[in-house]
Length: 534
Image (cartoon, rainbow, N blue to C red; front, side, top):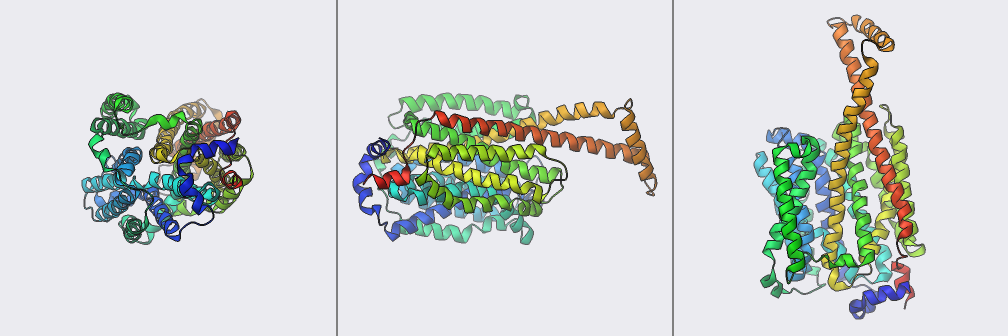
């Protein structure tokens, strides 16, 4: 029955897909690999820059309030383009859209390297994020359009690896580049590969034809509503935790615009002849569940990529280079797990794969709830291996479940929605994580402070001992130095406890997801099912 379902769901593509079931044209394989590399550059660019914001801030003489916009501008622009890319791909064809996206991303990268002030950098980053965002969904759509089900055991781990590995190794790559050369090379490194990808895309992609008639039906109101809705949502989620949410006028204004944009967007989605985004893909139960799981994977993927560097920087005092070296293990674990995940996707129930992945991820975050201020590379080794392996075991079946049973004519649009859920999951996850860190840090500091007040005998004894130690150091006000040191210890412990709370929250989330996987219908076996049905 499972095989019958996938065959019926992909019936329009069978005549085209049946022929290359055992042999894929080399031209298409090379074209697809070029697309995968382009997607890798677009996703990696977010994290390599985030690891080196301090260097960019110094180079552009930007203030601490301005520099986050280097990231925010990119993310807002990208989150608007990702769902839009489905319509553009149908209208222009994959070949034209991907070539424009790769060439535009490359040009914007070169421009960003020439920026002399923060305003130029923000504009170039917005262009880079918007145009580059068109590459990401195109790869997912192509993978499930041009390859037959019998080849998905190879293709799905490849795109899953790129989508998860790029954000994970980003801080490492960024740290190396900014230390070995200068921050300009964070952008210049994209230029030569970008030219090669754009050239290969134009010369080799031949998956589909353009439908220029769609331009006359382009829903400009829908685009405006979607841009306002998603763009302002991204800003609210990025800036809200640091500015007490709606108490900040800019965040409040964006929340209002987001609400109005959302109303316009959803009105046009259900009334326009050719909506900018077709939500009918969610009527496919597998796609709806796959998107939900993708949303949660986004929370884990981007949440931990944020949490580990913050812990190592704030508690351990690491710089970007040291953080990158300490966190490289997760990327290695993903790389070596990808082929295993591909083989398993043929051999076992995809639900079991997801359950193992979710439980493994939860185990890694539970391990981190025993955090201390002394934890270093070796203490973080097992949680990182669990994180990397589990992420790949989740990602491959989620991709297959979400996109594997959709008819080809819905794949381009659905791919945009699917990738959007992962990005939104990351944005929501980071907002919640930041809010919890801030609130729980204040809570724990207040509780710990109660135990180091003047009435506490233990605190007074500790303070006296520290004062005696400082008195032996010439030129110090021993009492002030001791009080300052004690206050720092309390702040550090409060921060550690707030990190533990966040890791426990993630543990509960992923452990409960492992349980809920039991309630979804058994999906079709993508690789084995496709091959066995002949």
